[in-house]
Length: 386
Image (cartoon, rainbow, N blue to C red; front, side, top):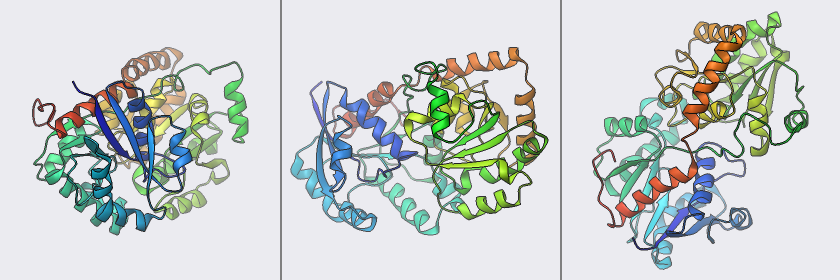
């Protein structure tokens, strides 16, 4: 097939990327390695150097730096700028798309919590993203859903009039693997975070916000911290919306002094943190994909996550599964992990490595290219849930 010219909107990627921001960065890197397309990154005017460092393609410094101005620019002016670039297709990786444009557009839908769980988001964001998703489902050339569960939720909540491609996230297996890159590297990384490499800890990774189940985790882990079965509970993630509820849960815990908030942890330290864990807990109420759970498995870590979720879909029989928001269930799972035999831990570890190994960003990029070609008429979708 012919060479594709693609523009990718990276203007919403924050300085401390997590979730959709990490997805956008990793996708850009993977697309930049392909020889069947050229990539132009639509960036904020003050973010050119950071995006150029990805080495993924040409950087177009078009978007205003402030959030309000950025959203206004996308709605009113970005479509014209993309048309002038002459690309074959434009990709909006975070639910939204330009209002007026001739260029075909692909839009990524990460999850449908704005419809299914509006209470875990700010009301203004619920209104904005519901409208954006409904519009993309009518007007985009193709939608990318990050999991089959998200694709199913989309069809259940929204009238979808365009093709849908499921493109699951990848893992950087060079970083997320069971062994540290060099002897002593993990201990050094942990010490740089102010952590004792020998401590027995539960690690939770992700933005601190209501849907991540952090308050449930604090209540479930506290008895094990009090008895000394655990040395610490480590919360690694930037503070998000609704974090005051988490602050109150920590203050009221009988083991408050053993709950460590690291804030945002740089990418190069995350694998060491995961490998140090007696268990990684990811008890989120709902996710579109839940990449930290799969990355934990890639590091050979015991994982506790939510039954009936996309994490359960992706992780197979490797994790201990708990009911969403159930303190007793989560506390029991922590006790099971801490008391598990070496044989059981080894069995689950091998299952986890097997589940994680096929997930690569190169494979994710290949599925996105299918979506791009569908959007610009170079490929026909195979079925409605392609």
